[in-house]
Length: 296
Image 1 (cartoon, helix red, strand yellow):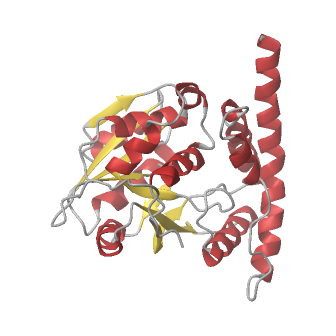
Image 2 (cartoon, rainbow, N blue to C red):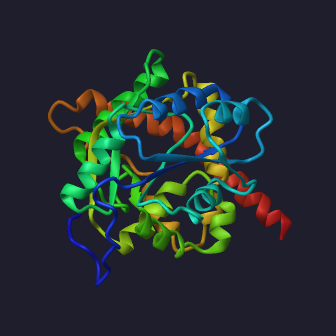
């Protein structure tokens, strides 16, 4: 799936022998996760890596942890999460960019495998298959089951699927980001990856997925999850009545390919999770919508 290239676009050739990979990480009071994230980067088998931190004004130990692990490029961006993504990539001189979150932990050979994969298969971008980091609580196990379902289905479409690339050829990523309206960049947080992927898909449909690539630290309780997805919904309202409106509405549907063989339990877990996430998401979304209406 997703092997044909759109139009006449041809990405610049990267340095095949030892390409440079930039890992860009947005942060905001991320000290609880960041050390695990940076430690995993520090132990990668592939070494031609640089890291930048795009911070939203942290008041905890985030910056000191970044310095501890040798991060020297730190950018301040107090706009949206999408704006932080754009700022992190804007001055990139690397061959590839990995858009990582501070609560993600790379497997030790992930970067090495990504570089080999894009070169061998001539890909423009790669989805990282995720598992949940040490799932113990009911909420974490729901996330884990949902991950298994979406990775089994392998729906790479930005319109119907929910798996999203994080590893891009820099030329493709910059071209994609240049097509996002400034207003959306300044306002959108929760749906940042979906919007970036939509624009990257217009540039090239050469996408693949790397298995066993990253662990994600998910919310351990419903209270934490509520806060996360309320904020996600609130920061997604900036995409309302834009070209992304229909795209994001499709993301709220139940997963494609549910109830296939060996996926019955995961399918029920996915439905429960979508409902539990959907309530705070919708409340946050409409809260932001109504507050904007009141301002007018």
